[in-house]
Length: 378
Ligand SMILES: NC(=O)c1ccc[n+]([C@@H]2O[C@H](COP(=O)([O-])OP(=O)(O)OC[C@H]3O[C@@H](n4cnc5c(N)ncnc54)[C@H](O)[C@@H]3O)[C@@H](O)[C@H]2O)c1
Ligand SMILES: O=c1ccn([C@@H]2O[C@H](COP(=O)(O)OP(=O)(O)O[C@H]3O[C@H](CO)[C@@H](O)[C@H](O)[C@H]3O)[C@@H](O)[C@H]2O)c(=O)[nH]1
Image 1 (cartoon, helix red, strand yellow):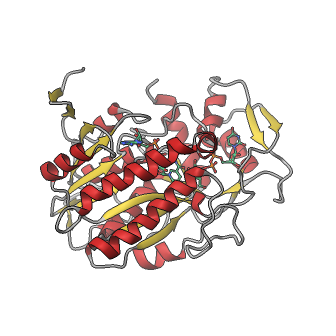
Image 2: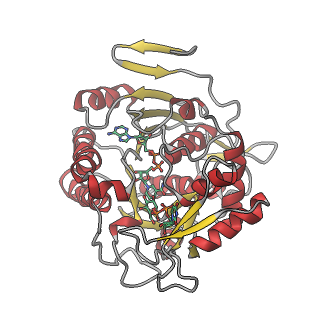
């Protein structure tokens, strides 16, 4: 155990120094996020007035650790609960948030933590995330993502006034889309247990709203991508399955070639189309969702995408352009369970939350991911 850790029973608190600055970068739209709760300092940066206590389940993962960093930079007090099944303690250290190593399905731990932290809001990122793996291991996915979330929700709703909850949902709940772009009221018919587990949680949130007055937002991310604009954090799934990091690993010589899954889809170049959204844009949406709930806004689901569909080959060409290197590519068969097109209709998030993707053009996403890959640990 490294410097800066101490044990408290079975619980490990990670006590690294807080982030050096409470400034929030300019031009990121956070003025709107923190309205009424922030001021501009001499340098024009945004500094939060009211420090809030935020609990992040799954905050040692790719998106959750970026969220912890954004909240810490906005001046909030952040505690991460993560069992580190796929997350990284050193990613939490970047934000200076406290890390409690444990499981969302551990009722005693979660109850203790809620009493200890008394969070003003909870963000729930904790999940197993591989759709393909979920087909082989459906029980494990439903147990981890759905049943353990129910335990977590029991602990939250046992409180007199449960804190508002923002949940990481996914485009995978829609299954094979009937219309593209996909609006939130599109039928939800997941075609893999991963999507099913997320839909079951969304249904549980709606039920808890009726039974316990839980206020919630389910943010249905499309393809999360990119990295911290200052390359302090980024994607580090092990094993990695996502297109952009795999292409960058190939460029770096960690893999021999890039396999394109299918070239006979009904799309202009025959490869799958996806909607890539920058991780920082996703995190900003969480702040806006919290603000929305804090102001009494209606609970519900919101699509989050970059708003544009890009094919696998377009992504690979962008990787070649940004890195200025050629990518060895091989065409293989389709990957089971891959819909041809997934593109978000993000009108509701724009209208209701005031969200607008700012960094989600493909070049910026790949540039940030590339900067991260060149300096990431491991
Ligand atoms: N990455 C994407 O493209 C994408 C797209 C749609 C939705 N999502 C959702 O966003 C969330 C975050 O995704 P990510 O890419 O950061 O994944 P990630 O694997 O990097 O992070 C998930 C984190 O949750 C933790 N975790 C898992 N099960 C846990 C449990 N039972 N108790 C405590 N901690 C647990 C892991 O250790 C990890 O740190 C997930 O809920 C995922 O389903 C991701
Ligand atoms: O080596 C590879 C890896 C991926 N792909 C393709 O690239 C596209 C994007 O794949 P990937 O990056 O693995 O993301 P998705 O499978 O689209 O899934 C992501 O996006 C979904 C929402 O759109 C979320 O539900 C998932 O959690 C998230 O992992 C797909 O067509 C893949 O078949 C390849 O061709 N070769």
